[in-house]
Image (cartoon, rainbow, N blue to C red; front, side, top):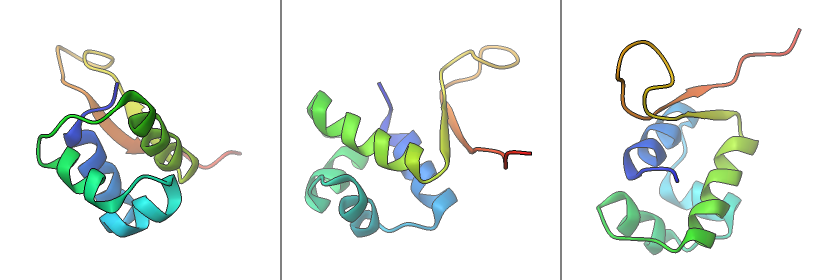
Length: 81
C-alpha cells in the first residue's frame, strides 16, 4: 500500500494541492490531509488516491525495487515513444 510520504511526493511532482487530489480521487480533502499527517486511511480510500495519482502520470516505486535497500518512492512516468 502507498505511504503518506509517497502521496505528498506525488502531489509535489504533479504540483497538486490536497484539494486537487480530492477532486481527482473522490476522497475527502480532510481525509487526504489527515493521512499525510500520519493518520490511518481505509484501504478503499488509499486505492482511490493511488488510482488518481497513477492516472495523472505518477509511478509508485516499492521499497528495495532499485539499487540498494532504498525505501518506497515515486516518479513521473516517461513519455511513450
